[in-house]
Image (cartoon, rainbow, N blue to C red; front, top):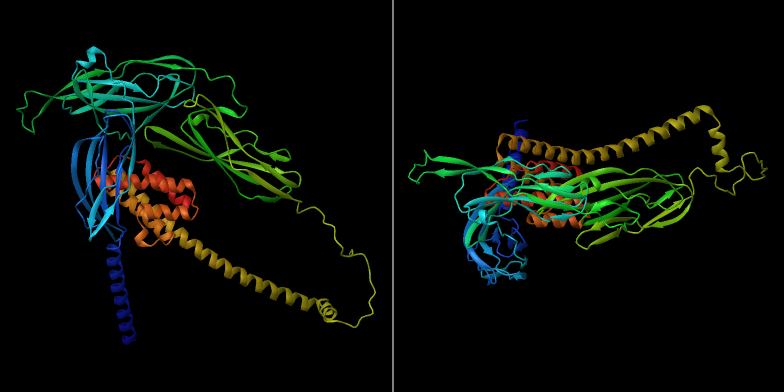
Length: 571
């Protein structure tokens, strides 16, 4: 017995040492990367943006940027480095950060950056940046003479019902402010208003009346007009805190004075939509896409057909209704139902995704084809548009309950036979004996039961493995949520990103060298994973990587909801 225990102990410690060696190897085999990225690819003339050249898991420091003209370098390079170990995987990064200013309008391409590593020259990706015409930052004389003022600025002042309007409260200052808080805001009667909680616009520098101001969006609201007419948004009131005194105060005994600042008022006009709306128009205004999925292309008469239709766009979420009749004649149809709805920020705008499920029952056999369509009004194009989904083909077979013509004789017909008794005749005579029949039925049932239970056991085992992994991931996400509510944002971001990456790499057996964000996204796309899951993964990891990289953690509770939704989709 002692010898057996010793062998077990040796085997256990051998396994532990192998595990430690594998873990150590994993820590040094992270995927390397060298790339350029920016916080915005579309800016206005005179605005600034951030450009970063990033080395991941590469031992090099000599980053060289290309000629950045016609952009003006305002700051940089600011260098930063970090190292982290998540789920036993060690990774490191090093970056150069620049703040660039757009000095003229046009479309420009920033050439790849280079660096020398292990005797080889590495190159990043190129970046395309679009510079739009300068924003109208003209201010009334009274405001241009102030050191600090706040303006309401709308993405458009003439819109249509249901069109998304971005309303920004923009701070302009030449002073060092301690704080800026909203005290009262105007009524938005006649609009469906959605406040944006996570505004990440970079501070900008603009010239007004020969003076340089720093600007920052301090609040953003999305407005969706509900009716036509002329509307006036009254001024909002903010309270700002400014250092008081001549600057001789100590750090611990600084004094501040509070001042109230009122914004401008804003005139908005909501116009009536053109009259020539197509029959399938349901009120959506903006830009939209649509896709369709047919669950089962071949069914029998009387069998339910399921069609999923997804609409994605920037219009009023309440007006994103499913198209009416999509099935051709010959189908009994039912009202579509919403099976999924989600909204997320894309730049300054909100994008909404809705999925609808249509149920229909074919009443006759045959081959049916149709193309679902969705109509909306495009303010950019100034006209109604109708987009088409994929062509749908349904093959309807005869009902399984319909009598089928057969050449076999009816049971009532009798035949005489002059053949010698065959094996089948002998078997028939045996079956006629009651006890033998009962025994044969019991044996057959036990055999089938054994086969079924064995298969069921395998199925449950496989399902349990997948389900346990998902349950464990959701439990980890719950721990991350608790960290968020306790104010531990660093732990929240670390645990959330580690859980999502760990679950996906384990589920799909992704090699560790491909377990970076791009590698995982590529694996998901190659396996025809639902586009929503891929989009959620990219949103989660972009925010997490940026937060972990910069060491600045935004108060974003939506990441937990997105991660939970992602695990549920992949489960």
